[in-house]
Length: 254
Image 1 (tube, one colour):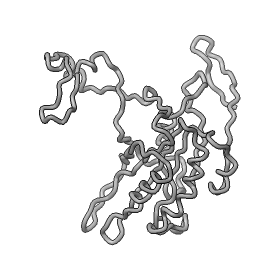
Image 2: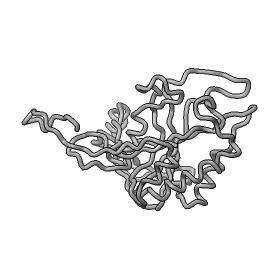
Image 3: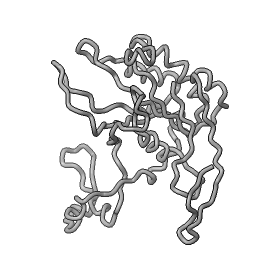
Image 4: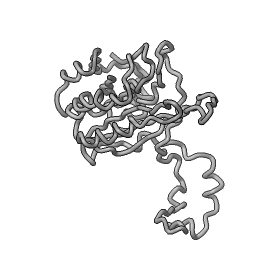
């Protein structure tokens, strides 16, 4: 049961019953319990190759694709044709060189039948500085978007962001060029119409997400913030609840 206030006028609490299934267990077993084409969104952050061996057991980079493909095959089966699969993953550095197992996994997933639609970047705002002999500390991770079909559900208005203070001065006095689609001078084909932003309070975000790493689970060795999957739930699922509550989705993790 969920308690919430229903409307500004009544100012009284109501109760709405929401069915939520939490399936706990090894995903290779749990996924078999889920019907075909029944899931709207899959968000998973599996163990990265050769990292946190004491916690996850560790999968060697040259074995990672073979380990992951049986899982992704089940994910492909249970995901709706209008659904989305988000994979949070990051390569590590071994003996001064970046591993390529994530690139190999992307190619293997495409052969398995997935469309690699987009790549989001999670920028960790609270990443502290660091230096090695040939690089600096990582402050970002990949969020790879895969789909079964090229047409899928996406609710972009749900994740709009404030336009920012820059617009107050920039949009105050528009030139004639600002009122047309001004093509880039280098012939790239890109162009912009600045006047389209006049009167806008919110705009669409970029594919770079800025979230700090803090969360409620202080004991987890690889915790990420709750608002990271929440952002994708808002973008790719739709709730029928008449209130701004996060939509209920099944979130699976290997």
